[in-house]
Length: 445
Image (cartoon, rainbow, N blue to C red):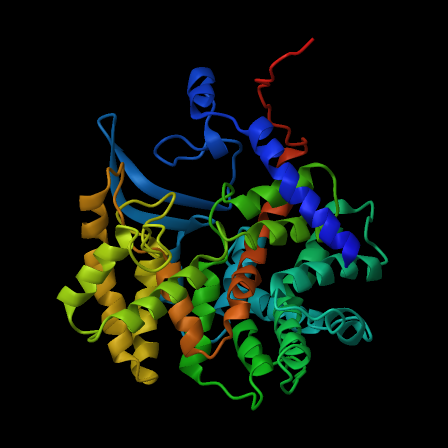
């Protein structure tokens, strides 16, 4: 510990040196026409590639003028709102849309049945893997535990770097999609046992259950869940499954894939990106904010009181003093997030079933009031609307999913998109991604 303390003290002392020499002013970015974070002043990403996997629409061109529009999200040519609407209640929505994203075609009944069977057979871990890998060094950081497991799984793969790169990568992606719920839930149970001194449950997946059903079954001590609970989680997974090639974790997948690295390394890199609070932790901040609002207002049905407290949050006088109303706004969408539009009806059904109508009223009130407050407070270049993570944390809470698993649930869904983009990068690009950085270094004698 003494060496660690000395190293930390040294790092504290040297931080100022790093800040002095690593800071780059906004003026230089403006002078050379370089966009910070590959985004322009309106938040639009710089084009870095082409994809057939998904499409995001937030503006429409009318006579050469771009105007904000209700957001749209398309998977392989299908509008996500229609996909969710027409899935029905067969319980395998996640599997059906995973097939669509991976293979680019909607499966027929036989193809879906075969795919579900393959996924069920793939829900298995190497002998003693749970004991030797997941239970060792149990941690509250479930994303770190999962990432360690993913990389370790590569050591168990006898065809880690098969010359049949595309076929082998597809096999590995399907296996990882299948076992991600196990890696997440088992990691949580290990943490809950070793760190919280609670009971540990390791339920094996059941072949006849969907991904959403298995997740709830493995998580709960009694294995019980309702049809509505499984349906709402299934929809949540579909809506978080894919969101274009430009989001941070998907772009990470493509960058690492383009170098020729293996599937496990590519997906582990994406996990490391997603766990960042600027990317995958939005719903946790929403939940923390909602708890703060609850504790500072007397009546959750008093809109005037709600509005007054939201104004204090926006002014930086309440909650975390950062002046942000979390869950409002999105880097891409303007008038609306289509995922939130689809999700909300399922959230409302679950809230009624769980007796959470007052909470739902509070969420609805914030959805109504926050955009007006934000628009009045700040100069904005596009509309402000709730995003999908405004409600996702509320849903997970109603489902009894521990907060430590929130970002992991995101990963369980998003690995499908990562896998689809890995396959497209391998097949359609075949060129290493190597962007350029302009040096503004001061030359010294």
